[in-house]
Image 1 (cartoon, rainbow, N blue to C red):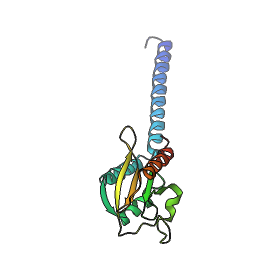
Image 2: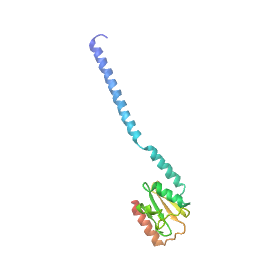
Image 3: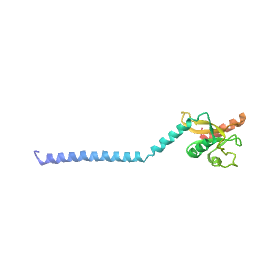
Image 4: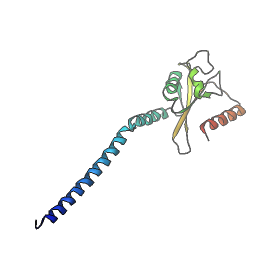
Length: 155
């Protein structure tokens, strides 16, 4: 080095480079921390389970599978259950009575239910509808039920 000023200048440049690397690594650490805290594992599990139940699209399933679906997904999906005692069906908080034998929404584990997966305009699954076999609705009852559920879905 020819003079002390060049040494100081080189030292300052190296310090700035080290400062920039420190800032970059700090930002990368913050991004990794936020990414790690996102619960992507449960999101993937939810998608896996939704895909698993989409296999029931237009299939007949036993009541125990319907009850399992209600127990596992009532908080995160729109679910409609219709029984012979309640042919129009119900959803939301009313589904808390599906295990009560005296309820109109009681799901008998051995009864058969037809499953229809409900999808938005993009084809994403947003819920499920289960109808007990043997239900017959008039055209006006069906229209009223569809209107009610569309309102509940926000369409």
